[in-house]
Image 1 (tube, rainbow, N blue to C red):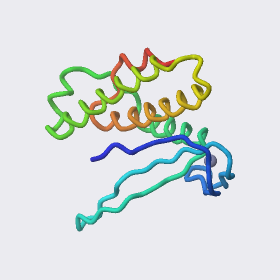
Image 2 (image 1 turned 45 degrees about the vertical axis):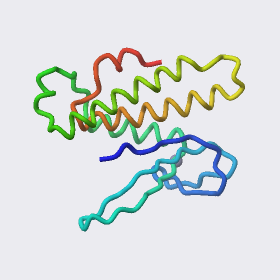
Image 3 (image 1 turned 30 degrees about the vertical axis):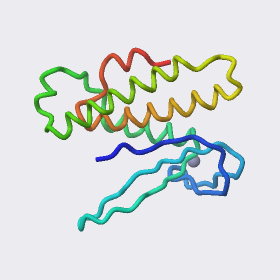
Image 4 (image 1 turned 90 degrees about the vertical axis):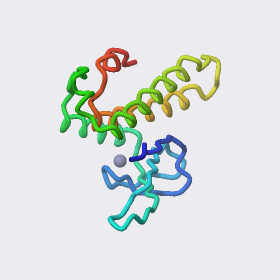
Length: 145
Ligand SMILES: [Zn+2]
């Protein structure tokens, strides 16, 4: 299992949005999701998906709707496999690091909004991932900004 890499950037070349299947114009904001796929034979190849930023959020919310919020209780942790527990731990650490980075953004940075959007997109990605390994911690739901 790998954490998909999510970033927001200016679209350099026209692409098709994975969610709405409409064109993403060059020069507009675009979310790129990059991850490694693994075939049954162990062969790995990378996958890149493109989204309008709003479509990325929509597909994320849609996913969460299908996987409703489950309060994380300690007992569930025991039910996770060793690999899943490790993955969950990595996700928790990553989220904490992103929160830290967000706090450290100086208001005077000219591209602060873009940087913040990038961090938020990454956090959204982590939230989607952590649903698979025990659910979103209650603490995260309260710190939405
Ligand atoms: Zn779209």
